Length: 133
Picture 1 (cartoon, one colour):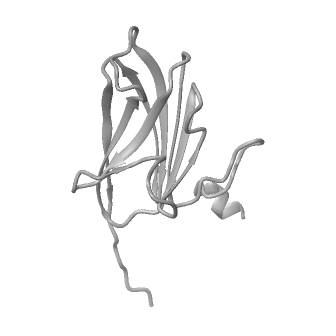
Picture 2 (tube, one colour):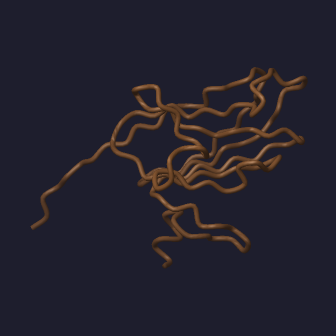
């Protein structure tokens, strides 16, 4: 359980919910806006809280101020995006931060949303094998 917790697969703080999947995204921001997190794959498919069950688990999807995603993804490149749920341009910039965890990777990415959608970065997942004696 401790190893799974370190990898972000189980809750590590009181009140946290299990997201599931080796890739987790957790965002928090100030203000009463509803933002949506998503990963966009190489074919342009958006993976977010409305994605088919089994691929994505979400927490606080309709909450103002936070959202989390847990994903089981095949190797590939994924764009990390945050967007205002209404699709409108915010009246004032929305400041927040995204915490990304993937096998061998842990990052905190601050953001300032000035448009309806913002690109926060790219996640590249690769499978590597190694021979062990």
